[in-house]
Image (cartoon, rainbow, N blue to C red):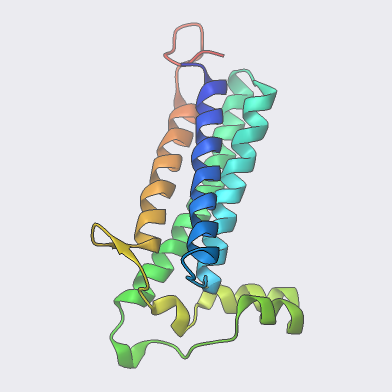
Length: 168
């Protein structure tokens, strides 16, 4: 399997996951919390890097660089998902207070304050509003971030194409 195809498949995965997120928001009525928005940005970053790599068709060094950038974007998303899972595990009396919506914060606050508030998380982030097979939304995003990280690491540390399992 060529590295170009692998990058394209990662892009399709990230685009599909973003599609599911928007379906959950606009069709199912699940309003995303600040940490959910940041996880979306993690998938956007990994997907954009993957799309650029698929279009570029890099050699060995470029594949390693794009793989590294995928790992960075997905690692940031995984850290945010971990923060949300931690908030969801807190006893009710330790959950932070609910905050304003992301839309309101973007209109009313400076960008850096929006980012720091989002990273801290709010009581909204601790609510488990949907589960599938026992995992909440950040649980599932963690699974997919780990998958993308593994693919990125394989692309980074694979054998050069003349004798490796991924060419191209």
